[in-house]
Structures are given as C-alpha cells and as structure tokens.
Length: 370
Image (cartoon, rainbow, N blue to C red):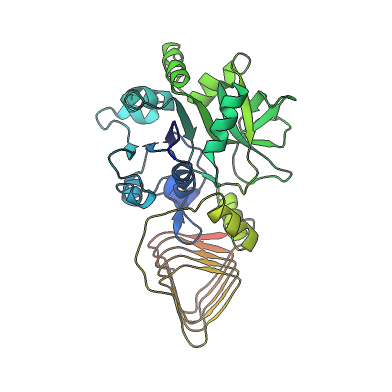
C-alpha cells in the first residue's frame, strides 16, 4: 500500500569524518556489510514503508552515487507512477556547493509541488537502521505534532556523530543539540524528520527570507518552543556511521547473528544494486570462521571474524583477522591482516603484514598496492 508521504534523502553538508574512505566517494556510497552502501538502509526503509517517490539531494563526489542508484530499479522505484530522483547542485553556480540545504529545497520546490501527497520525511544517509515510516506517520497524525523526529534511546555511547535530544513527559522534544554540545541525554536523534509538505515549504521560505539556510540548525531547532516536535522512539538496531570508529564497530556488530537478522530483515528486507557473481570458492586448505562472506570470493587461506565483499581473493597461507576487505581486494600468499580496513581493489603483496587496533584500524586506500 502506498503511503501518503514522499521521501527526501538529504546529503547536503552531511557530517562526514570518514577520512580516506570518502576521499573519492560521498558518505552515502561508503560500502557496508559485504555488499551494501550506507544509503541502501534508509532508501530500503522508505520503499518498504510504501513511499512511492524519493528524492536524493546530492552534493559533492556523487559519481558513485549515480552509478549505484541508477534508475532505481533495484528498489522498485523506476515505474512511471513512482520514482527515484537524484537532484545534484547547480553546475552553473559554484557557490551552490557552499550554501545550506534550504537553498536546495527551494531550488527543487517543483519536486514537492508536483506531488499530491500531504507529508514528507527528510533523512540523512548515514543512519544504518530499518525503520517502518508508516508507523512514524501514524504516530505523527495521532499526536497532532508539527514535526516528528525518529529517535533512539541508548544506554551506551555511540561512536558516531549524532545530535542528542531531551524530552518532556509527553514525548515532546524540548531541547536538541549537535554532537559537540553538552546536553546530558540518552536520546539520540536519527536525523529523520516527518512533517507536512506545507510546513516544510513554509520553513524554507521564512528561513531563507531571514538569511538562514540550514533546515535543522536554523529552521527547526530555534522553533522548538513554538513548534510541536515529538519523538518517535525507534527500538531496532541503529548504527550512526559517519566516522572510522563507528564504521569499524558497527561493521563488526554484523557478525552477531541477532544483529544481522534484525537489521536486514525486520520490518523489511534491505535492497542494493544487484551484481551477478558466482558463489564463493572455498579451496582446499581454506579455514573460515565467524565471518561474513559475499559471493564471488576465492579463499584459500584463513579468515576469522572478518567481512569480505564481492570478489575478494585470499591466497594460500594468508591470514585475515578482525578485518574488512572491500570489493576485489587481494591478500597475497602468506600475507597477514589484523584490525584492518581495505578499500576497493587494494592488493596486499605476498608476505606483507598489516596490523591496526580495534580503536584505530589500519586503512589501505583504493588502488594502492602495499
């Protein structure tokens, strides 16, 4: 059933401390979980919830984004009555890259005008989760809120960068601060905002008229005293993945069966770009334990507590422990990796040994031979 809501995945000035992993790609297309990209989780959540139209507000380094999303067919968003729209900044105006996201909402207001739905959900790409937005919209209507913010209560410190929120006894958000603020709260904002299309366009116009150009920082946070902003408490798996520590920790969490099953299948499946690869070939002498292995790999060595993406080759005598190797990576004969992250197409020479730590994993860059 189609939901009376449109989706926006906002990549404009997204918090990004992924260092070399985003040197040649945007945060949304950082590989994650063996065959996925970070954007797949929020995009799949929108599709599974019945949202028929999704716009991706692209910003910088979006070539990999265009290649990954394509026509949207892998998410069933390629039909005429629905659609996936990738909306990059203006190439004619170089100042467009430095402006806040409200300029992009204003410049693409025809996307909203052409839709007959009443509500919009605005999200970032770096929240690894599986959300039912139909339930969020249902609560939004029941509470009569102006804005509903998807939040998560967590008893442990998350390594990613996220806003914290403070609620009153009715669930209304009375205070919200950026990750560098001193707010003492165990409520984390998942950067997902549900509101009426009419309110969104009003916030865009009034904020820009005052010279303010950031949706959350300038339009929502200063208005918390007059806008009814309520929290929808999400109880599923959440990874805030926008720095190296968060990427490594939440990737390793996928090796826990209960985390993997809940994240990828509840309440719906997570989809990604389809690639036809043969099954992984486990050769004589291969020893693989407690690892997540994508298809197309060729393994002759030892792999323990690690994640291998498509097409990875582990040669005879090679040892891989507590590591992440992205697509088409190669570990040569008798090579050794421990607590490492290898970007796409990285080759480790025979006999070479690389070692990082859990707090600071070693990162090998794309197309770099070590």
